Image (cartoon, rainbow, N blue to C red; front, side, top):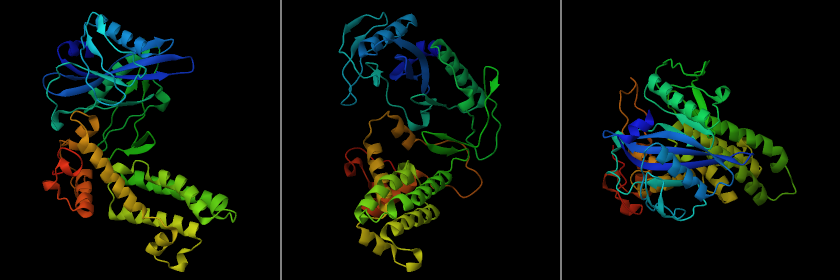
Length: 381
């Protein structure tokens, strides 16, 4: 069990996630990161039902009681943002020496003396949790089934159940591998792709299908807006452009920060963009007007340029993150295993390092965090 393993390990952090339903009953999810002597792990510790008003006082009282019942300790927490306040010296007995009231449930409690930050090769991600959407990850079907059983048990204790009709299993592998998972007596269907937070993930790990889906959705929006907005003579060109961009651009570019733009996806994205701007400008493809002339007439910049600028901005956020943050660990991770027998895919690190070189003139091997704020870019393979 996870609790038995935690007693032998050193707890690194405890994340608190709160969700409230219509009956004003909150479920407190305890998500723990611990060090077992070999690697850092993250797992769902348990769900605690909270009744009544969900203030910080109730939250941390419940946490203290949970740790007392399971003979666990946690101590000081560290500052990590403007929303966080200091919580000092909690003991396993549940006795609180001094504290501050907390109104936010998005808190992370850390030990007073955590070990050194983990290396990227030792970071394991066991689950992703956002509201009521959960993704469980494991390196084998057996480990994934165990994780699923623990999660199902924790849900039952909290008076919740897993929706098997909305749950799916997928193997991230370039070969087709069967993965039989079940909740109680129900077997989960295995799929080749699934959506999480409105982003498409495929079993092959490719991003091209998600980009194609975004371009198709944006093109459908253009056709809808053509009659309702573009053809309206009462609206000025500036108003049409503003309305269409506020709808078209977010649909096309959702999740673009981690895209790897190949020549094919660049061409498809630019074609969708030009089709959009031609409609707003009242032009047709047969008019054979250059793209640069259309951008200049409308007073806009190319969409691909904005995408690349946003990707470099996200890179800046990554390199400024403190060590231990999950996005930073994923960015610096070196995946193990053999590559498929084909041309290697372009990794996001390699792609964004080329953007930095082309737009800023900073060689990846010579760039330090002084170029982005502080620290090292860490872009070299």
